Length: 184
Image 1 (spheres, rainbow, N blue to C red):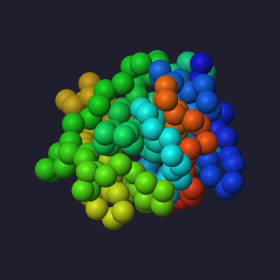
Image 2: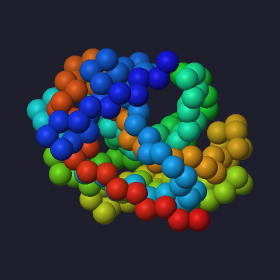
Image 3: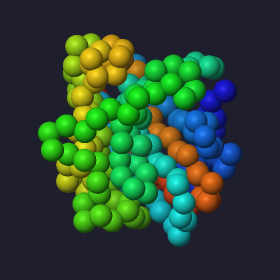
Image 4: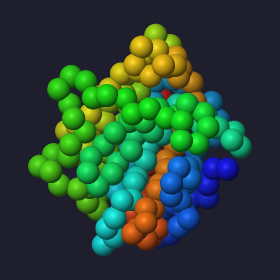
């Protein structure tokens, strides 16, 4: 059910051209990862336009029919954090906190070479996700039963994802590099 075929070209990772409408390309690191995760990734952007998405995934786990993850969704209009709660289409966008909005600094869309950092900390009572672009805090959100209707995720692996979008070309928007720091 999930489109998990990431492509590599010229040293960058890209999504599958067929990814769209809740069928995003998702690639997850294997092994055991500590619950506090910080991803740093660099944008590879060509001339494409459209509703494409770049994604950073925190505490991700999935099986053939379900996905549980904090998806940091980097879209043309801003950043949102979606908590996926199982089946395709079953997600909730977590609201911004602490005066953040998810808007890009200076209103500019992500460009080639921009650096995104996404971090998750916390436990089954309260989890916090923080997103920075080029070192500037742009979004912070929390998850709890009261916010999302389900207990915060406390385990899972980091990963990346893509939604090429209707007007996008898969090889025009990707991740140039990706690194993770994880601690308990």
